[in-house]
Length: 279
Image (tube, rainbow, N blue to C red; front, side, top):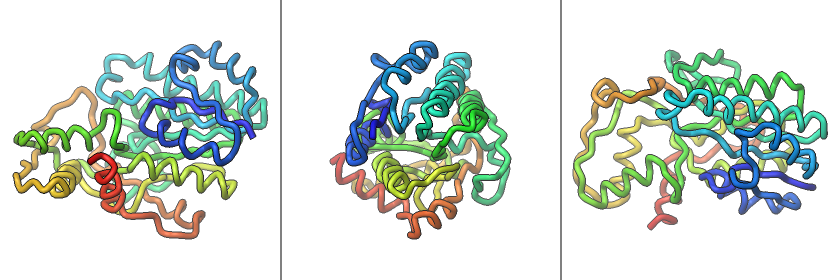
């Protein structure tokens, strides 16, 4: 089996590169060797490689910057996944693709199910929804995984930012009126492999159990670092950003839990693991 991985240098891609070889020959690419913003080159490269599985871990993830770069965000998150899906269809390959909780508007009071109607409220969310729709429209075989609040002990993410500020003794003010599910990148990669091993296809919400706010997440990080310094809880209006965020973007993972026939780990336990690696 030949596996093509995009985005090898990203948080999720880095983890995937370490677990996917168990399934076959892995061709791991980054932007220098496979540019998702260049659809013609992308199409040629896939046709040359003829993979059996395409794992698309590359994405435009700068949520606020996307507001000023909508065309680039749409090219990478919307158009490119469609190209990959068309080529997967032609090869009868499986396309594994990662999407986001930000395809939802946050108005629902309970966790979002896979068949809830998307309604993104920012450019990033709209670009990711476009990718989902283009993939589905091709009729290719796909495993589409929506996730949220991804973090890892490397790269740029909320976890590392808070940990750095806590260690420096800085005063922190963190939003407490947005709810979601912190998701460790290693957990994403491991669960993706488990789903591939079970020959799973379709749309799934891939997050651990439980949910919290950004303030709750930051507090858990600080506590694990032994900090007794309080973190001030603020509202979204006190921390304006170019892109609006959903008030509630908690994803319901029961469909995935049923397929794997086991409960998924709680997010604080995965934070413990990440902390042990980063220290």
